[in-house]
Length: 592
Image (cartoon, rainbow, N blue to C red; front, side, top):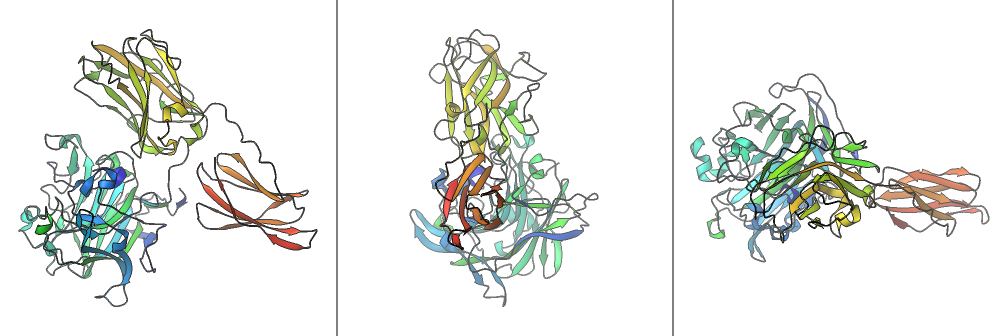
């Protein structure tokens, strides 16, 4: 499963249990208790009462996974997800209720003979702690339908390191329901939490995915079929515990026998929401279309999704929360260099050695401070590589015209590459040939500094505004080492260089804009009387502001912007010569 592409790959693994654009609330209080919770104010909700899906909150999937090179979304699912299978409707079996309808159909699209729907809030809504409540109704599951309301960590790390929280899912295989006496699929609903755990790193589970549902009671068995009736699923979540429940006919029942302890940092980070109705796949007993017995079309209805405070804790953030790093110096791995901000290994970044068969821990002393990335290459003829990966995507767009500098101690006869990668899987590499000084790096086997222009490092595809692998090193595939050696890296710093203010735009009329910095845009008029500016950012809410008049010039500076933002604007100003107000045409400006 690749979290970046929102693909879920649920397997039941040999690990039994876990041992801002807008900030609506961020509170702390007394020690939380998920078993005796105090539910506070409503922080955010999606009631699905409109005429169509709110695309400002939700993104609809369109594809079968092949478009992201993962056909079947990592689960051998049989459906094609289409926005056409999503609608807001009046619920036929509950008068007065309007809900999101996700419909699975027998419908051929390309190589898929089923279609269905899936939505998520990635980059639009993220939740951290609180009580998350989802009221939904599932269709007749029979064999083959797989409804789910779940969450994925916003961290750009690959699944399962980002964490997965399954608030509810149905459609389990008969073998998965066996521990509960093998009730029918319509009488069995469960929850799950998946994280990366060292204890789960066993042959056959190379992803090290640890599932709390593995051989653990994690379900609710209703006396009445869940098909075509609403129940409410709840997740109580704080920094130390998680509790999953089902509210059925006014009675709340626990999924697990006891709350789950939160012992993974992945579960202490923000998550985004997903709702979908899959058809077939390795979670179900329908590995191929002929094994699907569920009557189609089948519709899953979601009445609402709500997030409340839990014992004074919980927060919901709207919009993309990746804030650009300020110009200056950004430390990737450094102890003593003065920087504006930096990553800390084990806290905000991880250091990965990719090929343990060729390399291991080295003993080279640090260049500076007390920490160093030191490795020993022990298998001539094999490749080596590793790097520093941020736990949250980093926006280094303010560094596009700068330099990435690093210290390295490596034999002069070893050819290697330095690279970076973004959250869209784009990578770029810069080669450092053996016995050749490149990008300032003196090849004498001692500590030396390389300096790569960021424009060269990023190449033509890597997105500076969404970097994940902020430093990588690998062997040169065409010149693999022929002997063993030690090498070490230290003091890795991105430097934006001298920041310059963009030159002012020459006024071409009574109104114009200038960009004083990477985060501000100034509106100007020279009409000599009052003026208003009207503007939107990325098609958001319109702002209407009376500008400041100094002499004959009006100005207003909009802040909080970032490179790539599209600002649409128009002016209303008083024209003294003609004695009436003038409305200008709308124009647009893209932040640089």
